[in-house]
Image (cartoon, rainbow, N blue to C red; front, top):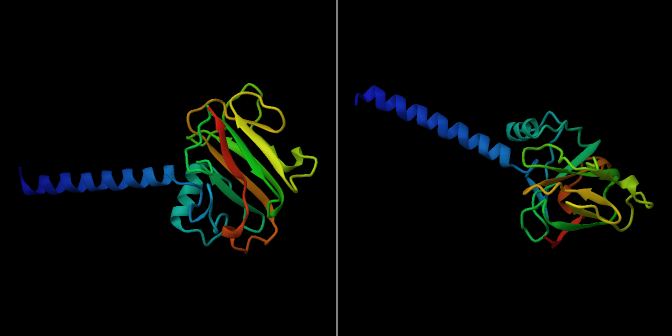
Length: 190
């Protein structure tokens, strides 16, 4: 084989491996995975001009319209509190308390980042679903079949990811999200 052909094959293989690795890392990334709080991950630079190229790529791929930090903070979880991947065929109890925000919502997404189809056409639960407005203790059941109380359908998909959006963070978006107390996700059964 001629030397130029070897160089060309090597260059093409390098480009393919580099691009493939980049796509894999961005698609598999937790949203802004630079701050971990139990099973939850978040970033500090969503919706800001200071966002690095990696954060911008993750936001673009995940389809999130990120508001500035003083307006919203986003947390994602792809595992339960014990570290096991979230399985839409199982039943989970999500226990939370007062979140550091004026209002919040929780949504379940499939691995491709789409809302999970379900017969109830229910796609999220918000703090206003609770008499306390999400202040104090609250619980949500994540399950494929209807559950008593606040229920977020999982659609029975094999893998899913939760996104917790908190609006008007109490620290004005300038604080340290790693000190936030976020919901506990406990698998109850499959």
